[in-house]
Every structure is written in structure tokens, then in C-alpha cells.
Amino acid sequence: MSQRPDPAIALTASDAPEAEVLVTERLLLRPHRPDDIAAYAPLWRAPPDGVAFVPTLDEEGAWARLLRLVGHRRVFGFAPLLVTDRVSAVVIGEVGFARFRRGIGPDFDEAPEAMWIVGREHRGRGIAGEAMAAATAAFEARFPGGRSVCMIDPANEASLRLAARLGFTRFGRTRRGTSDLDLFERLSDR
Image (cartoon, rainbow, N blue to C red; front, top):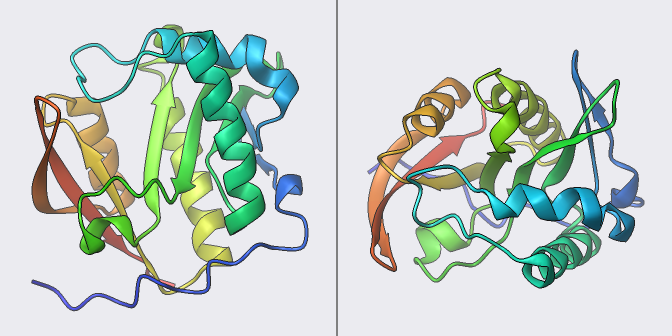
């Protein structure tokens, strides 16, 4: 097993974490706002096919998730970002890092967890890769020298390819509900 940096790197709130905005060639990534709910909820009604551990959320569940991420940003100074099209402002997905504390164990729970989801009608166009490249670079610029993790259903080939491109390597496996999931880690090169 590789030597890991301390996962408790200084993940403290910045002066204005709600102001974080990232712009890529096609996308604008920004913090969630309560008035995003109408555009946000449909993202969680149709999670990726064949990925058992990604929840399907009704309006109430999407609202609770959105508010949780607003609060997460206030507490930790970071949270996943809403991904929108730069031109149309249509909500496309959600990407970034969080402290979800899934009860997997300290090797996983104490590190920031990377996550990405793209709306069904926007998949297969490289959006997750473009958004996660920007989110990862921004996160590591703010919190250098750390370790991040993610978990992926082994049937989700697109996410496995993206994780590899982002520099995540497999370090374990866990079971959530009826699904076996692979655990990945990424050591910051900053």
C-alpha cells in the first residue's frame, strides 16, 4: 500500500466560497443556489443506466441534496459545483469534491471525495471530463498536496475511463446495498 499524505489537509472555509466560478471552453461551473431547484431536480430523476448506487431522487430528495451542498460549501469552503452550458445556462450536471462520510472507513471517509454526474441528454460529449479537469485543478490549487478518493460501479465504463484520465488508481473495494464498488485514490501532484 502506498504512503498517503495526511487526508486532514487544511480544508477550511475560504472568505467567499459561494463566489467560486470556473469557466471552461463550453461550460460554467458554479455553486448551487436555492433557486436552481427546478433545473437541478431533473438531473437526479435519471441517473446513469446500470449504476445501482447512484440514487434516483424525487423533488424533495433533490431539494435536500441541493441544500446540503449549499451548507457543505459554507462549512468546508468547497462542495460540488453545478455544471451549466456557457451559452444557454442549461443545467448539464454536477461535479467536484465533498466530504460525504459514507461509513466506508478512514482511508475513504477522511479524504475529499470526487463525484460527477451528467444529465442523460448530455452524456457522451466529454462534458464530465472537461468539467472534472477544471474542478480538480481548482480544488488542488486551493488545497495542495492532498489525497482525494472516489467510488465507481465496475459496470460504469465511462466513469472508469474518466477516473483513469484524472489520475485515480484503484485501492480497494466496498459494498453499498447490493452493489460492489471499486474505490480509487488520487494523490495531488501539487
